[in-house]
Amino acid sequence: MKKLLTVLVMTVLLAGCDKVFHKAPSFENTDVTGLEYGKDFSLLDHNGKPRTLADFKGKVVVMFFGYTQCPDVCPTTMAEMTSVMKELGPSADKVQVLFVTLDPERDTREILSQYVPAFDQRFLGLYGTPEQTAQVAKEFKVFYTKVPGSAANTYTLDHFAGMYVFDQDGKIRLFVRNGQDPRTIVHDIRQLLS
Image (cartoon, rainbow, N blue to C red):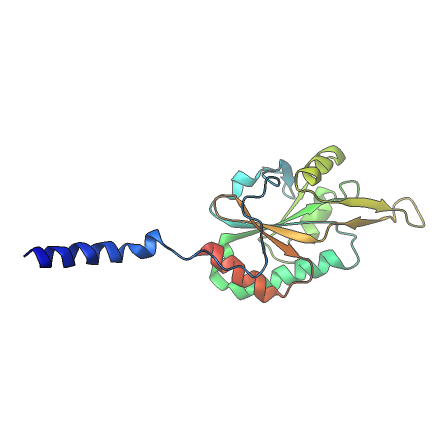
């Protein structure tokens, strides 16, 4: 009887081991779990609704900083995220892509509401005043600077090119460098969704 009881106790303990000793995610992009910055933002979305990170609790959030007049990195990154969402299939509904403009002077609500959803209807464009933009950029350690063009409104922006990824609890987990294969992003998002 004592042996049978010992076997039963061991079976119960071993059955629970996978919960206690679960394997940590193996990310293909840069794991920044525990980063001391990039904790929150307060901006408007392209529908005019105030947004913070807490609004997306329960979803994996992919946050990209750019501007709609960008000639290369921004549209390429947004197209890559469109591919990521397609590859995720039904799981894509548990992912929120946020495009934060660094050019609030030109990227009005109207422009963002046309540009951002053109890549995927679920994507949201975020904007604020120049001061709010600078504050959020500082919080996320995002560099950007105006490069004058031939006329006052034809400037470009040199800017940080990468994405931050947050888990479903709103904790920053990953940094994705510009130009990553979308399959690595899909892999990591699936890890965060599991």
